[in-house]
Length: 226
Figure 1 (cartoon, rainbow, N blue to C red):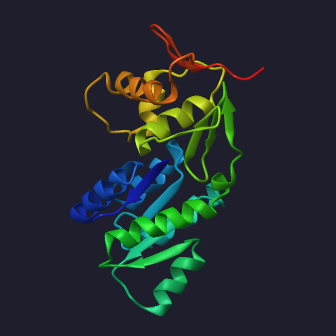
Figure 2 (figure 1 turned 45 degrees about the vertical axis):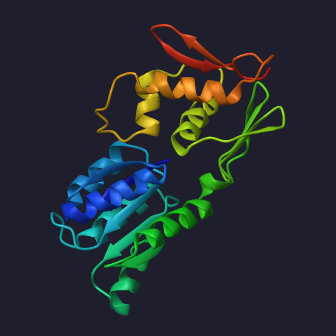
């Protein structure tokens, strides 16, 4: 899942980004209200972590939240602020935020609130993905093959989920990076190949065929069930 952080304090933004990345999410970060609106208009996100006091627009995070709600009524928005007052919390919720977290906050609580919001989001009720004997449940983040439980890391799950969501279609390495890593990823170029190998090893035992097919020069594909 891909998250957007809109936070003008670079230090806080970096801590939140690293924390959520370690929890298995792909995370993009911007630091102003206009940049937050632009990012949301261009990219597809599953949740937004939004600071209230942002530069660039008259009402800061309130204006960003209002624009998000114009474009998408369902995406969860977790608002962050140093202002601990009932009036500000009410204003944030009225602007369209789903939850409110006052700074300073514990990072474990941040992650717990993100998980709770994602469970309640429409995406959390997505049907179980099935292809070639593999079943993937996005809500519980569990995977099986022919009834056998497959233990996947968060990144491996994200890679397999995107392939199965596009079963029958070739998925390029750049598409997988955009889905499972953040848009600023600049790591080593064969990261997708490496994670495809990890997933293949976990999905396949002796006597089973490989469900992920490599199309050289194009990408990867899992055949859809007929």
